[in-house]
Length: 256
Image 1: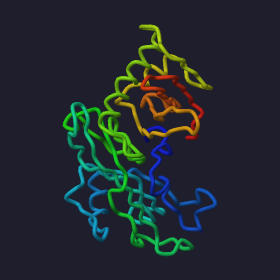
Image 2 (image 1 turned 180 degrees about the horizontal axis):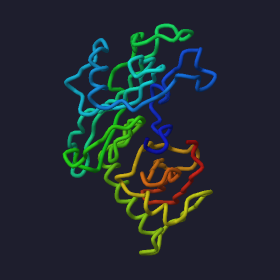
Image 3 (image 1 turned 180 degrees about the vertical axis):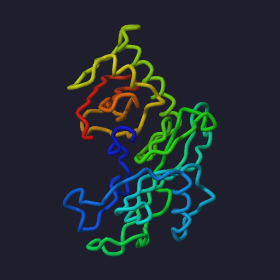
């Protein structure tokens, strides 16, 4: 399983499939989880009322079973559309999260699920990589390296600028040139070497933008994770004031 599935930050739900109440107090005897491969994920999605299968580029996730893989008690499915080119070096797409729960959470029920009321592509994604060069593999947390979630209507121009700033911050950390802004490190378990390994656009998981009150700044908040490092996740805030980077904060105090 890839690192830090909790960092997906989906707008619709957390990544965990609900368990029947009989299992909720811990890993009871007979309960197991397994990665849902793409073929199985597509079969499960085909049973979701109204889901547009023609839009599915990739799907994977996790399923729970009781005693035997033939007794499925719940699923979490992450679904992606194929990103399309919207500007030079920018591709955009959509992401969906479908959760299949048992009809009655107080009972262990095999292969019976209540309808998921969401079931649509609710999350915006973007990528700095041509999707034809991305070859996702199955993972229980649904991560696709190279594709990240975006929020708050970020423009192509903003995405282009931030991709350059990511490279610049990494270059500063590697001491390839002097930085014209302050970099604050609030780090507990990540070394500079780990940081430079993770701070690449191919490792970007999420991006959002905010305007802290009464500061006149605009800050872009991102999460990166190097797949080789289980605890290598780092949050990065790049803030602008009057059109220029004013400060950068790096923080690895992220709940897994």
